[in-house]
Image (tube, rainbow, N blue to C red; front, side, top):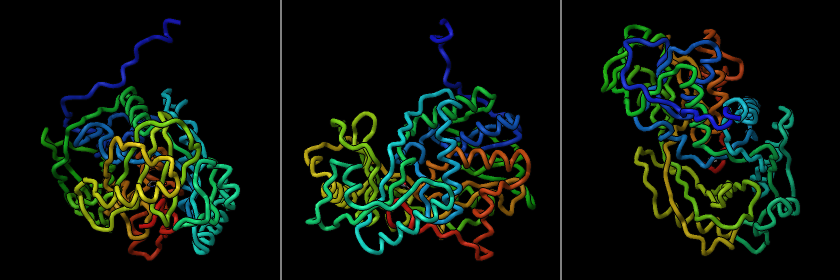
Length: 403
Ligand code: PYC
């Protein structure tokens, strides 16, 4: 009984950097923390996580918490399916309530072309054993009775891709659970420790420079999401990435009336209701490149107009907050994962708008790569060389919203 009420420390930050670590992970978000958690399972615990802000202050704290695996390519669907499966067991594994709600995910189709794309995705998904199917407007209405599906709208709903295992999870909890687990295993967490340079000699990185001093590392992992190409530049590694912002916002809590995630590529919105009752809504990626994480009036106007077409009952709901996050977009909209030409420098990059949902599988596969020296089959298609070898994995049509 006493154990049940035992106070369990979340973590303690390390103030001093050691001179050397077996592994330095740059980026204390969901990917970096998950990798540390899985490295510990391989017995690799001489690890430091260097984060320039607070833990979870980057993309891990700026997403809209959606999980799904209904991708267009077999490579993408397989990879995200493995991630969803890890997420399903993660609360137990981390002994931390992650508030995962597998409420289902609807991608609406408003044109013949969109119906064709959804049918194609459903086929690919089912071949991979993923629960995903094309449904008509009646079933859409059954799943989302509060959504307006009338034909007198700008974008009448012709059907949807229905993906029952999709849903939402509490993003902060994912960060906190991974951070606690990694810290308990002996990993050092260094927030407010910005990497300012990487020393490279030949094919190796020999030093990681920070304002708190320079450290050596056997392996360095770039898990910096929106900043990934900047860190790669420091290593002399070029990533084919452009950096954009994705904006989102949240309403005040209202009585529960939506039990499924709703996405529309043509209306450029994705909408869900959080466990607290707030409507969490996001829009499409901005087409210009920037590191300026500021919301725009256009975003609010377009997003609210389209959301109100689907949910006119939100007309009087007040917005609590809006935010923007950085997206590092690759040319084929798939991630860039694994080795680079620098022997001891690996990347988790190119996540565009779907990095958060990949966190556990990125952690597991990167940890395997570091611990065994072998690239797991699941991430082999996402190697950086694909851009030089013409082996693109085009996920364009499976973005939550059009890019
Ligand atoms: O890929 O599901 C998605 C997504 C939702 C918001 C941004 N991306």
